[in-house]
Image (cartoon, rainbow, N blue to C red; front, side, top):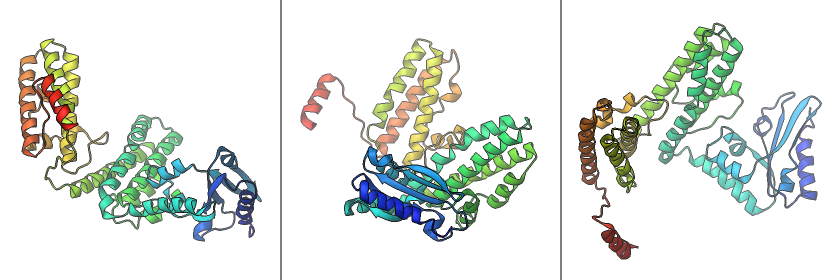
Length: 372
């Protein structure tokens, strides 16, 4: 349909005439923006409203069997997209602006695009890996459901979860390469194959997953794709790590965690094993996360068992409290907690972190008067 773009022009004319202060930006993206449109390609138009009245302009319709979506994106959501918190980064990054209500609005929009461009810089490598981990965490739920469906012979439900895994992995890989997905899911594979960092066997596994008709085999392919992606993420984390610990920016961490040490000891005295168990496990898990982050490694999460990271506790000579945490073993647990706390404080001080400790309330009052 040769005149389809006239729809966008009509929309801009309407805004200029009746909504000049209500709409900040109008833009379009997708195939029409990059020149790859074909017969019956849809026309994707977004706008950023300044008012609720402007937001009401959003609507979708069909012309000559072609779908057209004129949808609003708030400034807040646009900023969220530009921060790589949504997969549709391309909507902002690769769009073409048709209308801006003011120079200030255009400058604000261009600043979002510049923020997206900066994501690819080396100084944002850790940010990108953290974003990739955050997205990749979503596969846990789909993998769990897929495993539950493994023997159900419900290929429809399995394919939905397989789709979720494939798309989540694709977004993860894009973020890991400090980029974003620019096309629809079918075309994104071509883009991902150009990335430097990809899970082992990525293309073959994707092809196998979307073509497989055997339930059990498809589940196995999905699990392999997830495992290979996880390995890639861990490798990238390790590259960033220098194994040199830096506690800069962690002032107050021990003071925050002090309550856990006290809670465990008190619970041991009261023989309150549930509290001992939960506080002990949480303390050790939190300290391991802290030490990894101080090394420049992303905090471990639901994708990794604690076993993946337990070596960091050994590396810094901290006792393993979890392995001695059993009912009626209160004396050993208390002794272990005291050793753990003492070793942890020594480690902090050795690495230049000051511990704020006062003998009494009067000493704190003096500190408050002299320093604040």
